[in-house]
Image (tube, rainbow, N blue to C red; front, top):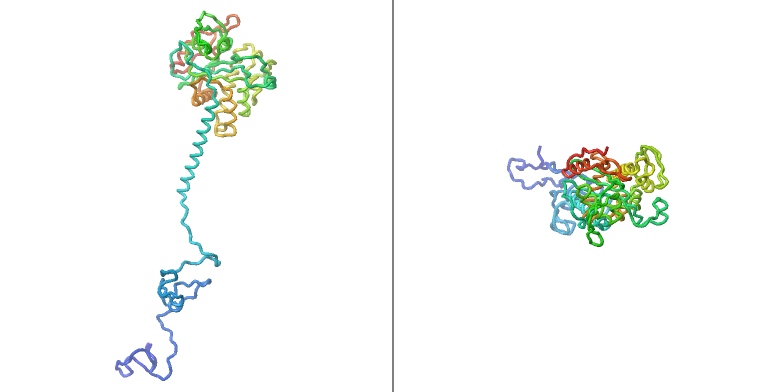
Length: 427
């Protein structure tokens, strides 16, 4: 097909190539023609944004990305310099905002983890110093003389005293403690924390023991032993915790590493702060002096009931031995409940428990919070069946005092010293 106007050929119609341009030979001007190789640009989308940057009076013949500047006052490029396709406008004609970078979630997670770690660490350190400042380190074991050699286990002498310190008249009446002045030992036990298994040995307060030579805790004077044989609780009444430790070590041959003592008020306060302690009482009993009135079966004891439970002695035939058994059962149950995640990880429960106990807990000067924790977990281990609970073996009585079985006591002490499994029985 010939695209030249009619009446005109490339060679003028006679084969002679003379034509120049694309004019018509006729007198009438040539009409508009559509060039085949040029396509009309597509209609712009709604919103007036052209598919490509237009040039040449918006005719759409410019190459993509090129702006001639006509009709905009710019010769080259768009206002502000630089050519290319302008950014798409926001929907619905809103103001245009440059999109920001995508969030760096890995960095945010790292920063968040550091913040949480610092908070936890700060709380832990704060709690440690708060608790450490409340511990009453009043017992000086350096005053104890002629001490046995150290063994492989860590040993604690745990004492429950009848101290009424901090109690009001109403508290004394409610807890049935009486109003006696001073303080005496109401319960005593040795707790040996060993890798072979923990052992809890109750020392009946009526045990017959010898008072050895000792140095007075207050006077510093030496009091020579005269072979006096008395009840074990008399040692505490005579010169306090230091003489009690000295007497226990002298009569057993076992070195005591740490001392811990708690009074009536502190004991009841810990139980109440825990929300009570669940006990399974095998046989019900009553005791007017302690205020005990229990039915058989599982029940939760509050502070008042717990104190009555561990103090009762006159309701049993073997008064002192039966009471020490109850004391072991209750202390182990209390330690087991206090050492659970529900208590340790709950600040609303942990702080009241620690506050109630540490305010009235008296320990030796070398006792750390770590040692206290080890003591409670060792008691918990006895409850969980990982150790042995027993009374000091006895062989009879002398004038109402319980006489220890020397052979069994020596075997028991040797096994604890060597961190061996305890096989001695109190029967």
